[in-house]
Length: 412
Image 1 (cartoon, helix red, strand yellow):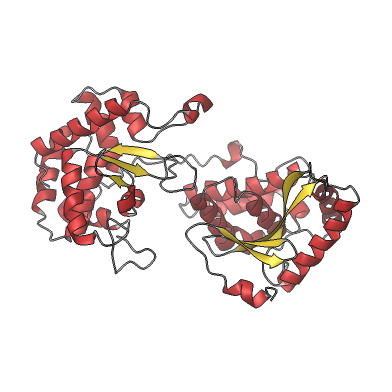
Image 2 (cartoon, one colour; image 1 turned 180 degrees about the vertical axis):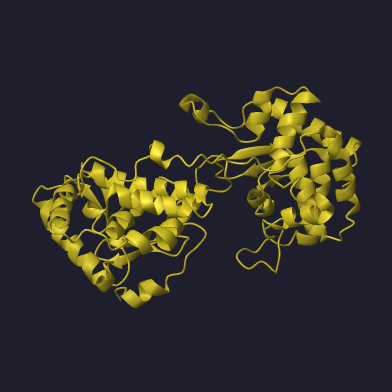
């Protein structure tokens, strides 16, 4: 039986996006964040030598709300397929047809935003897509969603940005303007609006805000007392949470990456923890793996956790997890606060600690620490390198760092 709109509504999000057939060659792409897009994969020219292409039809929803029902998506696919067989590439037709729609006065910011974010689904990480979608749905679209995109002015964008700055939300204001700029840029690239981005960055949109570094123990004399307090656990934290903070100190990976670790990521023989699909922000579908050599104290901690959670997929399995079946990523920070280090240290601060103290005390070169932190960026040649480079040196860093923490009060 063909899929109905009610069937599409019942499709539940998974950890990664997936597709289902809606019939007649139209696919439904279901994203982890819950929204769904219709797309059509076709060949052009329509022969055996044709190149495979993807046409994003639109976001699933009610036609009355400017979204796409299954019937509308299939009707549009049929229309485009006739043109394709007559020698017209649907992707090239899109620009001309969208100009006509925009000129008719029915092309809204919401429609552009939906098409833009649908086009980015295979280019950006799931976490980035989720962040952009949240900013659009919760803040930008309630203001500009029903505006004709050609009518949105520079002054309206500046006023929207300034309304957030005035509420002491400068970082958020800058991010919202950035997302708007990307949407307008998409419209400009398709020649749907004039070549002047109303959300462009300028001196007028410089809030003067400077990001504040995450709290970290940059003075080494502060580190041993913290390690003792952590080992004594005087605030009575759960064993798993205490172990998470200790592992964060030993491996300096991000909290979200740490608590979502799976036993299948651990190679006990090689003493390597492989973090799949890593892009400096945790799991994000990039296809790159980040390798973390496991020092002796790391292995000891993981063995203790294995005796508790070894029957589950996740190292930090938790039945109390609301969003995920593992420890809440904020739990390690709460424990550090309960130890009396509020405003002085957070889990992310361990990354600054190792960058500072591994250079000053252990004399480890900056680039070795930088690689172990996962900071591969900038130069495209560097980005193409296998993240296993300098693995012996990185293993030595992890072993010596672990020994340094043990010698200064950490107990596992």
